Length: 448
Image (cartoon, rainbow, N blue to C red; front, top):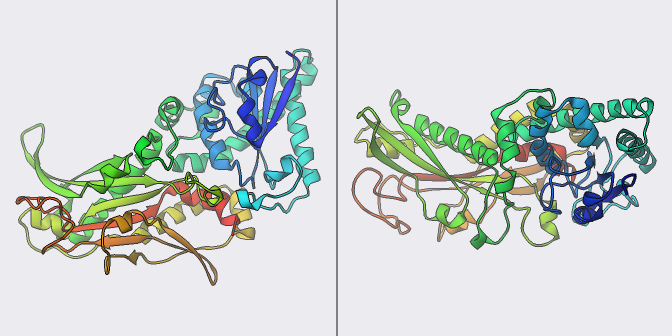
């Protein structure tokens, strides 16, 4: 079977680890991705024989974020090979305007999340056929150099364009720049993305099983939490006092540990023996897309963040200082920040499609759940919400806030000392991740 090439569409990629992986000259993923979810035997980078990914820009079932994960895991291989060699054995391509259905019968399955295309299926078929021919010509054992050389050129061009389109999302998700790797650059982000695959397990609804997240994804969550806590200190502390406070962040993989954790303040000692104040805050990454039922297939693959922050005024009290203020940061502020970042860096192809077909994303003020709340678990279970309103889709984040002093029924520890009154002086917010905003532009905003 050394001259046989197999194309697999959608869930048929689950059979890659049989004859296609072991015996065929090469395989082609059509609206399917080897990212460790459907087939665990190999990734895009570890496939023992030549493997091509052809994906549709509007594929609402396999979705480009998963292609970006596969590209990021293959990026380290790209740094070790020439562009032409990498594009021969591990090429990627995105077909503009093509959805999941146009790889087969053209019938759009909106229940599973696919998005209708404005382009005729004949055009998509012609582009896909051209790419398949190039892949076969580049890898067929009997192909002449006159035939294979231009085919490799075609694959190299398609792969470079695909990685360019996926890089803004990949960087926002903490998985490095596939485009930089393809150009011969090496970054810490690319290295982390490449070698983290074996330890990664996608989140599921089985809380007892826990979650092992991508370290780059956890790094982005930590950065956002640190920025949020820094903003809280600047808003609530007297001028010139917040800079001396160290911020420590715990990124929670398990929901239970997050539930029982509180933002605290403590006095610590540095390596030189000097005293410093440290604020510990917490962040948990949540997903809606890995829940049971068809509805989850139409949810973003990127996480949202739940953050437990300490008020600047509470930190002032912990430090024995006066002059604290009640200012707090909001989830809406970070939603807006991430939205502006996505709009500024998203590729023109995705932006043009979104502005033409997508619903505008309207950022609503936070919904304060504190009045009438029976338990903080009500906030824990409430994700940021999307609601169709006049003029677009409203994104709103829930928040709760506790007073600086007084009795707090949910407090589990009322010890004295700095940070001892856990549960008081806290502000909990939620916001979507930077990658979530990119995903909204790429595909999610087109569903509405």
